[in-house]
Image (cartoon, rainbow, N blue to C red):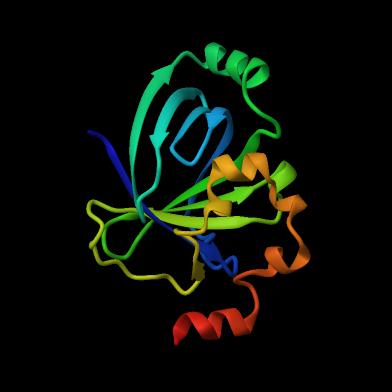
Length: 174
């Protein structure tokens, strides 16, 4: 069974930007619930249909299949809920051999920047870069499927500042 193991963090500054490769992504959800989501994604010239199971901490089932980009365009236009998720994904190496992904959201989610690291196993150790803020792995509102249903633009100012104020950072550190 395919498993996705990832941890997500808010990004607090732009110091990560040096040397990252970028790719535009457009994605939408055919259906989404806490137990299952079916996603269509156009990532550059490639397209995918992905089925994700419910989360258990940082782990969930994930099945991803390549599909023709024309089919993805059609699915995004005809079957996916609005708004679509639009973002630029930046990939950069982690100091411990893994990869950090930084998603800079656009459209209805503009202003949100989230970093994630995919792990081999749930207890895998990794180093947090200085540009990461609080961990949001267990906060459902940061899941892309939920950002489609309730975009960042609809959050209250207090919700949008979450992880960006010094008091929140102080609570994180101890």
